[in-house]
Image 1 (cartoon, rainbow, N blue to C red):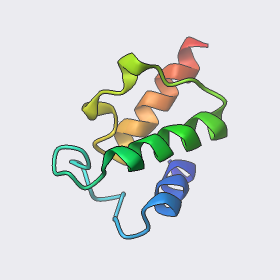
Image 2: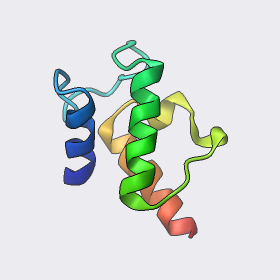
Image 3: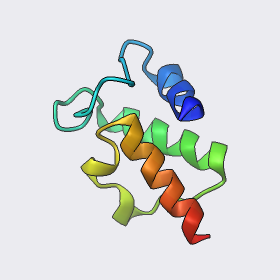
Length: 76
C-alpha cells in the first residue's frame, strides 16, 4: 500500500488518499489523473491494466487500486 500511496501523492499531493473512498464518485480525480495513475501503476508493477478494468470502483480509493494491482499480479 505504501508504494501506491507514494504514486498517488506524486500525482495529486493535495488529496488524502488514506481517507478518501469516493475519488471517482465525488469527482476528486479527473480523467487525466486516472491516465497518469494507470501509467504509473503499470510501470511500477510491470502490469497491464485493460480497458475492462478501468471501472470507477477500481479507482475510488487507494485500497481499491491496491486490490486491482494484486488481482492482476495474481493472474500472471
